[in-house]
Length: 279
Image (tube, rainbow, N blue to C red; front, side):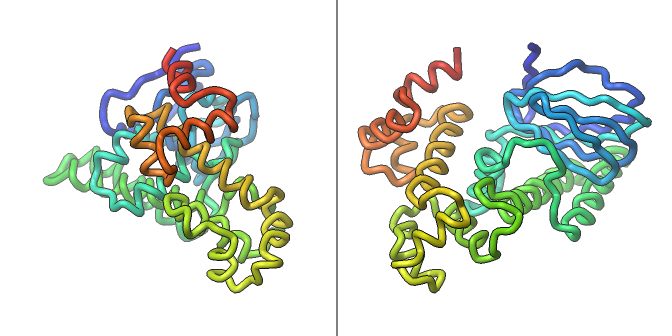
């Protein structure tokens, strides 16, 4: 299957199509797809669903996807890689929000915009970006880059706030807050101990573990382990960071500690995992 590359920090594309010009394919980058008008079917990893205007989809690296266009469709595509996020002028906390895109998106088909006000803002940003590309006025590139930054952060917020993979639709708001807090503080292990979390959220330490498992459907330790392993995997796949640098960033005692943790979760060493991704 064909795998497409991206040779710019980001790429913006507007297309009006009556039929999809490509068969099912994969990317080595992230792609946000926004439907300005039209209807049809979107296929992601063999899951099909109907699309319509004002929906946005996230295609992650190695997702297999294609379109079946029913009525003439206007698409807006924003393509970007992990390099763009880390080389741009995002603040540290914004970069960490991007980790939600890399590791916490459910990878299931469907519109990722759940917040109505964000939907309105996203559409306005897209229309402004298209206008800038048409007019090519002064400071065009700088303005487009800032709007792209804003769009990525908005998408990250929707994924972080409304799509935590371990939570069901009927979960309490406090449970969502706990998971968002854990994800935001995954770089600070001392904040993720049960006693620290129970104190921060005003839940007795004795009851906290039961409360967490009830809403997350796994233990606190299991949830944190899975989140950390996804972060390690992302760095092994999408960066050239050394193993010791990954260990330091994610709060492991040393490289040996990370190797032991990763092997217990994945059955192979981080080095071997990276080699299989690059083969």
